[in-house]
Amino acid sequence: MKINIITLGCSKNLVDSEYLLRQFRFNGHEVFHDEHGMEAEVVILNTCGFILDAKQESIDSILFYTDLKQQNKAGRVYVMGCLSERYRKDLAREFPEVDGFFGVWDHAKIVRAVGADYHPELTNDRLITTPDHYAYLKISEGCNRSCSFCAIPGIRGGQQSRSVPDLVEEAGNLTDRGVKELILIAQDLTNYGIDITGKKELPGLLKKLNGIGGIEWIRMHYAYPTGFPEEVFRIMAAEPKICNYLDIPIQHVSDRILRSMKRGHTRKHLETLLSNLRNSVEDVAIRTTVLVGYPGETEAEFNELYGFISDFRFDRLGVFPYSHEDDTPAGRGEDTVSKSLKQERAEQIMELQQQISLEKNQEKQGREYRVIVDREEAEYYIGRTEHDSPEVDNEVLIRKSSLLTPGSFVNVNITDAGEFDLFGEVSDQQVG
Image (tube, rainbow, N blue to C red; front, side, top):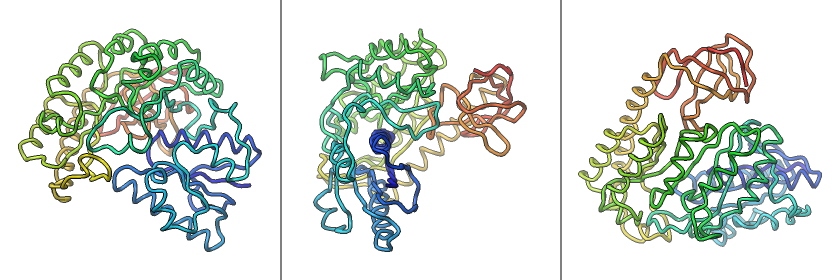
């Protein structure tokens, strides 16, 4: 059969889809990923159930593929993932044309529903859909935090860390297929391992992954600020393979808002942590996410957040208008900030960050960086420095002066800069 998996939402969903693709291919089926609109005997929609826009995208995709099914342009349609886990009964009533709904833990059930055999021996093996040279490594599921605005613990449950040997095995499988960059993801990297040993095991995991031959870069996403193991800073500074990059969402800086959000820390704690990171790791890039328009956020509290961002000057920043979520403490109250004001505040933050990003990029002109080549386009090779994660951060546009191969490393001299792009020329013809 032709089986097409459509992935919506975050990179954690993408990894789930990759495990399923491996199962189906092992069973002899022809597999596709994100081939939107193609005719296939089976379509599996891996949905997102967090924040309004993502939920709407998932609903729109269900409507699109059930319509294709009614036109006989698609066979069976299955829905899985966070939206299905969260609203399974409601979805089943609204979309009787769907052949089955499955939650986030139902991989074996989905495989069997399609008519294939589930092979548990493939647990640490998957078919990557990213370019061959980088892959996401999901080190844990779920979250034990109680942030008032977040529905993820209710969808994916409490923290469930994978063992270090399992992760080392999977990382080895990935490097055997040419992966050079591992991007560590979880709902909460900070608490990795605490459910297994009672201790935070991220430092030990980094040391084990650092010893794997073939890995050139190891990058960390989604580190919770409260209780972050600062030993990681020392490892990052000492080990060239650990990218000088950390994604650490702060959400806000007003102490009152942080208490209401149940973030478990104060502004002072946050300032100390971020200062220690910058003091410990030379030339580190810090990525963060902030939330504006949280219920009760005053103009003064928004201005406090704006001022903090202006002063601290994050290297990378994303901003989200608050989304009122069912079955969360914040969602049970009143959404007091208007949609238009949320959007206005988000735009103000992004305008500020654009200027910060431009100034930081201009400071890079004349410097040389090691760059991984991601792809080739008409006029340029497109790559990234260690300070940039794929899909969400800056790119380096390399003028075509020599033949480069995706997945190779090359030294690039930065000649020009925009708000979110760097431009450069190869300064060392030796490619790794």
